[in-house]
Amino acid sequence: QVQLVESGGGMVQAGGSLRLSCAASGTILSANTMGWYRQAPGKQRELVAVIPSGGSAIYAEPVKGRFTISRDSAKNMVYLQMNNLKPEDTAVYYCTYLSGFQSAWGQGTQVTIAS
Image 1 (cartoon, rainbow, N blue to C red):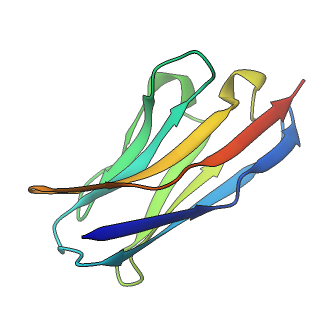
Image 2: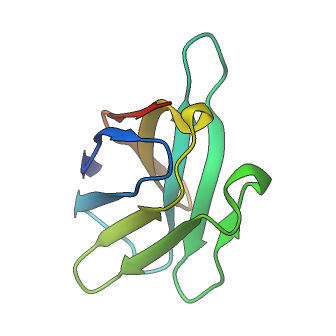
């Protein structure tokens, strides 16, 4: 099993920045994909960005050029640097892990952007 714990959420003004972190623990396979999804009130959970081990990041169109995902595989960490935040970025952000038959979600961290 894999456990994920997110941190770094909060409230900022539009145009501001936040950095989310996610720590993975448990039985972690070396070949995996980690990333971030988000869910706004009344909306479905949607992809934000994912990054496979040894591969290139994939971003959702609304965050391209503003968000940067990175990972430290040695520490089993994944990060999401969010710049030029907009009110529409307000959501609960979830860390995710996927490897073969293993999958896991974090508990989520609230990000609120004030206009």
